[in-house]
Amino acid sequence: MLELLTNSLDILMFVGMCVGILIGFPVVFTLAGVAVLFAVLGVSLDVFDLNLLKALAPRVFSTMTNEVLLAIPLFVLMGVILERSRMAEELLEEMGKLFGGVRGGLAVSVILVGALLAASTGIVGATVVAMAMIALPTMMRYGYDKSLCCGVIASSGTLGQIIPPSTMLIILAEVMSSGYQQAQFASGKFSVETISVGEVFAAALIPGFCIVGIYIAYVLIASFLKPSLAPAMPPRDVQPLSQTLRHLGKVLVPPIVLIIAVLGSILGGITTPTEGAAVGALGALLLAAPRVVPGASPWPFRLTGLAVLALLLMRQTFDLRIGRTEIPPFDKAMIGLAIALSVIAGYGILIALLRFLRAGVLIPTLRSTLTVTSMIFAMMIGASLFSLVFRGLGGDVRVEEFLTNMPGGETGALLFVMVVVFLLGFVMDFVEIAVIVLPITVPILLGMGMDPIWLAVLLAINLQTSFLTPPFGFSLFYLRGATPKSISTLDIYKGVVPFVMMQIVAMLVIYLFPSVATALPRFLFE
Image: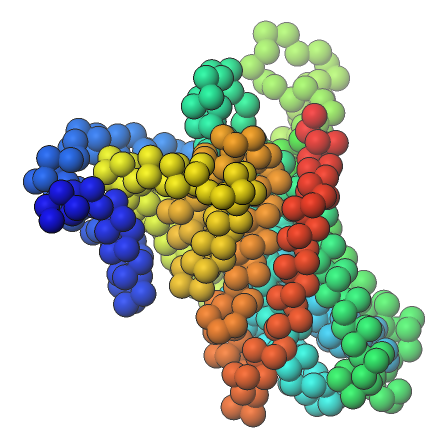
């Protein structure tokens, strides 16, 4: 009996973690508590070396000083600012007027706005709730089917998982890079290659927008075949096209410019992901500042935005280093211009912060950003402790043996991991899965020769699908909390099933045709 317990400590440890999470105990304390408990148990049974825990401090220090992970709080800040700027309401209102005269037009508007918000904020829960509060009453008023409304809102709100810049993609990129290095070391290759956040962003871009296109095609075809599902708005509620386009341009152009500035600077190699995230947070601040004080002049923020864009272009074009021994006159002039532009940008940022402070928005925004960021980093630290103890008890060896001996070889191992990740997505957040499960399984899969970029996109779509799947999908709980009692839980489940099927088809396409995910990053980064 004692020998059986000794040989099964790693399995019991994983089971204990799952039980702790299922009963609702905070994940961070579950990870740390279970790790400490089984470390002590392992030492008492003489199967765990306590010296392994000396590696915890360097791991924590590495996590907290990782420049790539600095992008997480900046993108979270960007999302929180835009969430509080009423951008979603204005976009939905204007896009509804543009497409409302077409069957399914309001649903198409919701999908497009969901994609824009995903690319702007990347915060799934906030996007689903915001879309439900804003779009659902309008769609119901015009006679849309309740299930279709729920399916469209839940699926479009979940696009923040796959469309960059997404917090999940940043974490996945870091996990993949680490796992890829481990796989190369294990194979005897010591001149290792790495993958970047920019490559994962580029890989997810085409699949993400393809999924958006599939959603739109489904809505238009379904409403054409059955008009009662999504009737067109009455002509009296549809504005003239010229007037609608003029109003739409005012609310659509700024977020698109912001998205292009952030993703374009990262994918184009102008900035690192962290610097791009800083540009995004600054851009969101400048977009939202005129909205928090209605009627105030937007020119300080427009000038600041132009100054920041000019600085980015100048950095790419000219040598602005001031530490050189000899600086040509032209470079001195460019450095002086860059300093002047920096002063303009600093002035606009200061004005924006003062407006946020006076409007009572700044403190709640920073508090929300700090809460989300603390949760993510605390979970990473807890997962590091859990991983150390799990590996010390031989869990990584057991998992490797299990996956390598799976029927079907590489395909069987991949299918098993995808099913496990999918099922865990019912009870665990993507951060928990990314920092607990993937660091154990990803190095093994990559050691079998799989492409890390391709695998990252597959896992991202898998997690997105898990968030949508009844009965435990996270997005469904978010939506259930924001819908009126007239909409039943069954209506929500019926509505999301077609979108779940589309997600599964998307995964199969990427599995069968890896170039859908890998072509763009290879073109941009090789």
